Length: 469
Ligand code: 5CA
Image 1: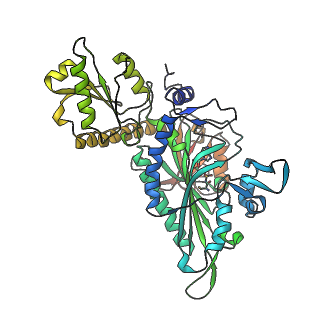
Image 2: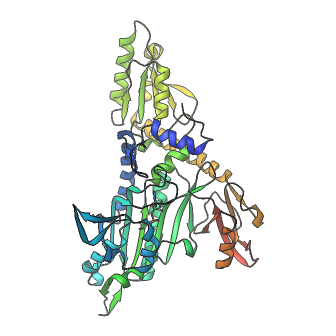
Image 3: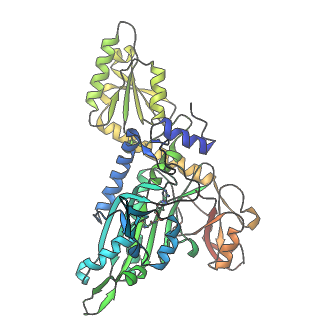
């Protein structure tokens, strides 16, 4: 049995084990094992991410180990990561001359090489991505999928452009790509520009995607950074322009981790287990025979026929010895989106009984109507239902406030804030994080775009604060 979702932390921790997403018993803190079932979910989720990335980037692979001298080149960057780096200092029993870092992210090794790759304007733009593991010695409380020390599924994209404007264009495109990705997962988000003190180390600015968990805390599920020419100056990434002049390139980078899987589990799941969008479910349709003594053969045959008919999808016919009730329980826990039951009555009527994981009701359908297009239509409707429900939940945890004293209550607080650093810091004195200013106002949010700064009263824009994961 799962704890109720209301006890969010406990529910999440139990669910990922019981549904066989991750094994949390690995004997290194912050490192987890993907079970086969969890890894399939990861695969379908990342297939989508890869499809989106492939339209505008080429996939590459850079080494896991970074020489200390390279990692230290960009001073802001290393300042940000100094305390999070794992070091490799021995080769066998021989101390290494040059310490090697396990990549915490790949700006430095990539940009070291980009300086060799890029010669002229004809080499630009350069747009690459990789999906790899990275290591961060996190000191905050570690949690499976959410705050890990080996990020197993780090999709990092890096782009190089002729000038700042082109980099800025790419930032906008990256935001669109991530919106498409999270819309696909039916996960609602807020696109927020981080305050200066919370931007990525070495970036000119950072735009983040934040979603909200059931306990009212937000989780950053993606970030997009405009690096301007900060890195190109330290790594010497220059190009000869059409006018013959040598210029520094401008860069962007943006990333997503297994938090995308975490947010999907956390947001759509319920008291009975996982609820997965059809497209990423390892089993999309489960067929459950309802046995009746003496008529087992007809029932099984009808089930097999339906399985054959739907073989384009990931279908499982559960003909195990378990009772139907036990099967319902198991496949609900695993988040199978479509359940089909067939008993003697259905066989007689040429029907099946259908139910969806996210809804309580069941209905009967003629077998002839059970076609590929029908299933795809259900998949689409289900995504829309999941999205609507998630948006409603999210909205219920956001409130607009005009008084600083309302800041520390549960959930996300939205208010007007000017761009003065002091005013931003004032917010954080209430024990919450200033997420930043809305880069885009979501269509489901209708607070006034501008108003008096909640701290000083001068002109402010819409901003948000919350406790964060
Ligand atoms: N190089 C840039 C862009 S790829 C970068 O590293 N950005 S980041 O530090 O913001 O990381 C990208 C995303 O990875 C974050 O937005 C967050 O969603 C996720 N992430 C960061 N640290 C962890 C962690 N310890 N565990 C799980 N996910 C993480």
